[in-house]
Image 1 (cartoon, rainbow, N blue to C red):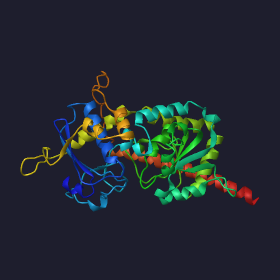
Image 2 (cartoon, helix red, strand yellow):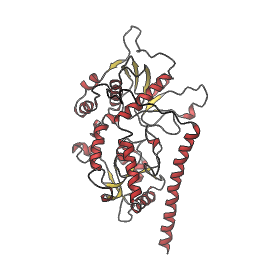
Image 3 (cartoon, rainbow, N blue to C red):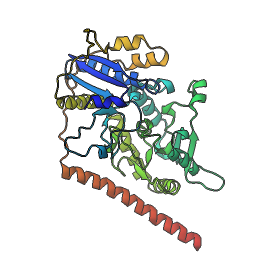
Image 4 (cartoon, rainbow, N blue to C red):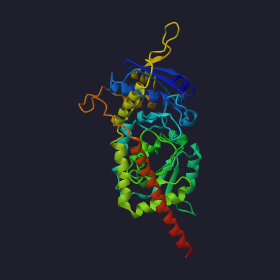
Length: 391
């Protein structure tokens, strides 16, 4: 099953006796593969000797490829393929994305430092004093849904309660990313999250501000987003009528400021407390630990017929030594200096019991019901609005 995942994988990872070995198949976008491996190496430093031997394939591209419909039979054996996101029709195994250890190409710092910057940004202004419009800044050229979002921008003809800005990364790079500090983007009461080619790494940065996040109906999920609840952590936005949906959301929030502020605060707490780096590492540990339990073979270091290793051993020192610029800087900033010695953190947190099917259905039904509630409010708002225009 693992070998079948090689078709689209960027690398194979083998962990034996606490050491990591890698076989690279193709170059990833930018340095996604390198920083993903860096993150796993930091996990091994954080909890030395605690992770069992394992072998896996990792695909660093955006969209999932292991379609459920292709593996219907009891012995179909879908390839276990790790990646950064999945969707309801796929079986790809979701893993934290590379940017938790820094996104060097866009000058976005490792997660712990970003959280500090955004926390400081949150504290610069009270929610009620912020710009009462929905903010988005990003690259619209990666997907049709983002291009469509730009039609909701303020114009002479319409004001959909949005303020949308195009992010030109090439231009930003030339200006040394002076206008791209994530800590400076918590100035609006509302922020918009919209997917790109698949899910977007921007999601966690947007939610970290204590602005109320307006999430345009997503098709993909990363490792943390399915735990969020509409009207508790975010406000759901229709995909097929974004402009009217966004206008209503902002109107509603400005008319219910205490509730809107509470939704933004709940998301901030979810990101800053439940998703701090310690817990990201714990998620990685439990995911890999449970995955290793399913292996029906003993992982070994792949070797050529002559006995030489087919894969390269990698460690933090070898990766960092070959890096420079932001790449080296972010590795140094996210380096785990020593094993966790805190009595409360010497071992990963306890893995909660899984949902039983009825409880999981109840959770999904609750989320679906809350989205329908928002859509009902929205329909009523626009019916009254159109009625008043006719009068």
